[in-house]
Image: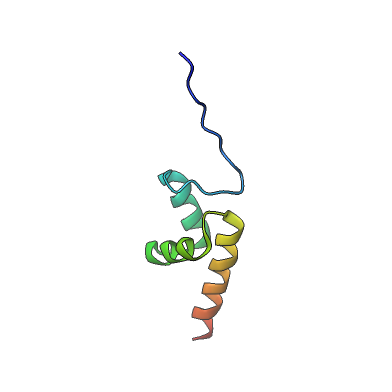
Length: 63
């Protein structure tokens, strides 16, 4: 039986994969709400998520 093999992209986050989400969220040291906000704002690109998370941390650090 032929099955479609899923393709994984190194620079894109699969939001359906709970392990990928958990690892990236812990690496960026974000809460669930903060991570969801960043992903909504920037999309599924890991580089964009990292950039947006660092901007979010700077905003919270300046308060």
